[in-house]
Image (cartoon, rainbow over all chains, first blue to last red; front, side, top):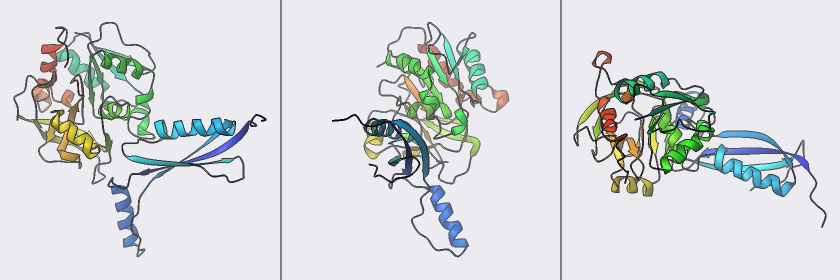
Length: 95
Length: 227
């Protein structure tokens, strides 16, 4: 089995408040939309964090998971998911 | 008794914290910079002050909780040393795992800066021995993210163990169970959103925060072991 090639990967980490947590920011946005005549419900405000990682795919996935779970999100309040793809293009699945 | 006040980039209550510590506990209380990897020898109390460490980037207290000095603060807490985190300091404590739960946005999204009334829920801690149980004290708050949250199981455990030390009389920010301050299970780490260090002189509006420092004075340096 040949070793995995070292590549540059583009990661996107999505951080959202857990459904059980009240999101006052989302509610404010929802009210503002309503005032503008735009009806929408369930508005929640989250974060997108982009980063580039270099290495072998398996090792990059492990590092990304560690960063996403232990630093980029707070498991008390937030859910986190991520996407990882080879930079600059090519879409691959995340976790 | 030796007090160390940790300074992070963006701390802005560090001066008040040092002043209150020098006035009440330790005339030689000193600042410790966040990139230091050790506390001064003989440190009894670590004071994590309020402010906006690292500009509140990522999450309040998140970056500060992962700065070099925090390894030493965690080791100090593990040894049973006392740690007091006020406002941003409380956020740093939850982010670092030294206290359970998290602080999220105030429910009305406003930054709240005013005196509030707190009920002292227990005097059975190193931080509250000088108060009387049920005493109502007036201490200022100044925060945008002071809404205490933890899962139901954690809150039940805090309540069951008597770890809720201060409760808001009139909840300003949406905190679960009106929680304003909690201690660790062993009782040596206290986190609270209100600012006792801003209430140690009558000239400045209230002396009600002084009891917290007087309580610590009673135990610090006497070799009293924590639970």
